[in-house]
Length: 161
Image (cartoon, rainbow, N blue to C red; front, side):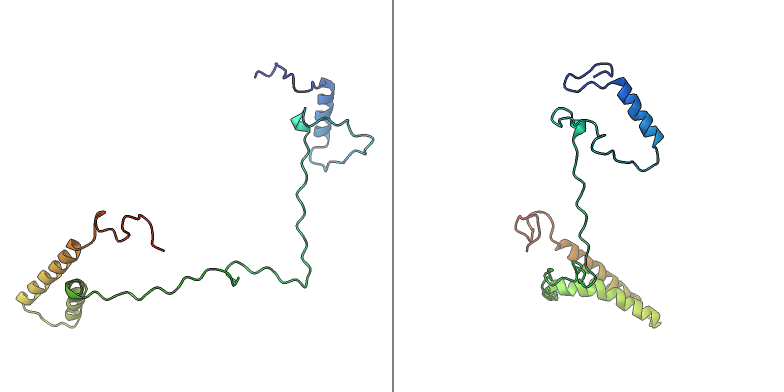
């Protein structure tokens, strides 16, 4: 709506009152406002007619705690917070999977220990160890669960509680 049109639901403002209000605002800029006495207050406007005349209640002040009252404990100090149960111990892989993990983790550790101990290993034994390491990793990757067929949650895409 252009600025020159007037909404029929709004009361018309007198230009002299608007100018006086602006002069009063500018004269008291930066100072604390003083409240007029009840006799000097302008007539009230119905808030249903003028939404700008609506008054809002000030927020309630926070209650002051007495000096001998104990402070409220924080959420982590309260007794009712949730403590999860201990998880079950992790199982040790057995059979071919356990042997593959031993080869994937144990052979590099063995190679590092032998290198630092300056123990020479024949070339065929080093090649056999490298082949066992690669075979172990291959087996672990090949038997890894993938796709929706091997979903441990039976089609549920969330955590099991």
